[in-house]
Image (cartoon, rainbow, N blue to C red; front, side):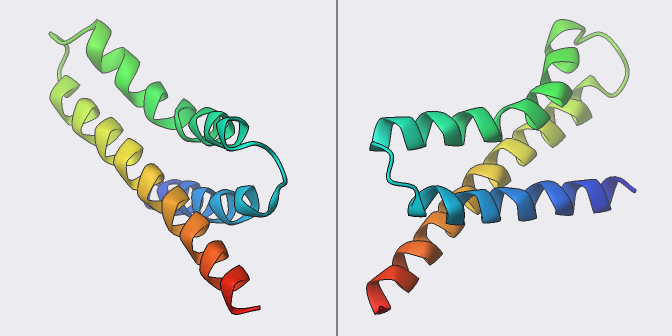
Length: 90
């Protein structure tokens, strides 16, 4: 189940990056929206691990949260660049 949720999150980031490129907003608004879309899921894992580092599996939770954050950023950037490449071909 965890792999399915992770895959759905990463696919959502890819699609969101693709769609954000096509919106006619200023770049600051697009980046703010991208940050607002990327942060919630990794923070759900990171905040408990950072507030209670003495608990079991806190290190694992930190690793998973950072990995989700980095992969979400890469997927968002990948969707953005794919949309840019497709727009350039037309």
